[in-house]
Length: 420
Ligand code: ATP
Ligand code: MG
Image (cartoon, rainbow, N blue to C red; front, side, top):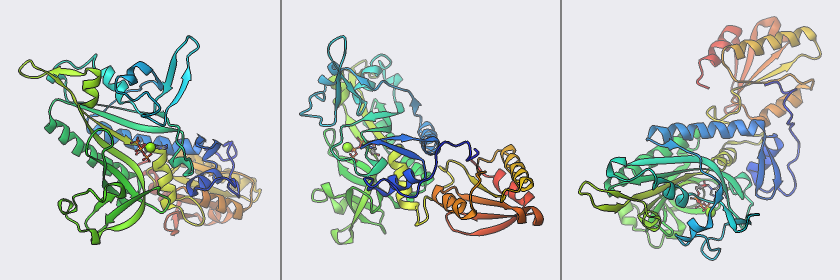
């Protein structure tokens, strides 16, 4: 991608009303645009990051047997009345609207009801189970506060998976497999080391649930954590948690701020009973399906990466999610010959399958380097008159600040071997 054709531009200052670091940096770098409080546009570079995050999530969900679907955002009140989750007194995040034809409609904030009702059409015997269904879809929530940039918005991507099992054992096995898959996802996204499977309250469905909490100053949650033992407990359940069972004492736990990047719930038969999702077991008896739900917020994960990994100069993307692997910075000083030479390097890299953002703008080196630091591609390759004369390319690794000098051949070898 040539920067002269990219419609987004960097800006020096973040909007004064934007308090969250993730949104400040992402807005300045032109990844996102704030349309209003709690609602952002994802611009070309930002969308590429979200798509990379979603691809990683998909790969790990598919690996544990997930089947992807896409369900509507528009919600039928009648369905939600069956589980008593239509009333604003019970659910305080609904956005609702009127149908022109008469009657109300809601905007989906989660999809347990929808997927359970849908599965009635396809599940009738124990032979149909287990079954794991997920989507990556926009959710709408009338959040009271929207101060954490893209980490808490009123319209946001969610990956929501729902499990349908015939037995508690099958459910527990999947619950475990999904927790492992979540840790793989967070590792691949670059913040696995700071992320803990955390004991939390189960809300309406079960006594306990597991949240995936990433330790970060920008977090809205409080957890008590033993980094040494890898145990974390949400403050909300600290008083009730059986710490002996978790193998820690209160003294070993440190109070930390954290971001809830994902969570997994055991739903039992609450939804299947309310909505009539049954199967015939081996003895021909009718049984309610045992369910679970498993959420991740891709944009919250993106904000977490920015909050944790950025430095004073800007964003630092892990290679796994970066919009482009290489930022090719051309310093041609209006010399047509050098520009043609740099164009040639750009083409050669692309021909080898390397994803490249090419700064072909007519701008001063200082401005180009500052923008490059702000944008945060994993590697910067500088091409100037000297490069052409000496045949050596300056390659800077964004995260470490390390500089290498590579021949043209070594440059191609380095980047075309990367898994992008
Ligand atoms: P929170 O306690 O932070 O409000 P939640 O318990 O409401 O989260 P879930 O309903 O389980 O979250 O949603 C699943 C995942 O979706 C969360 O773990 C989070 O990553 C993401 N998520 C939830 N609410 C938002 C939001 N308003 N904006 C962006 N992502 C969100
Ligand atoms: Mg919430």
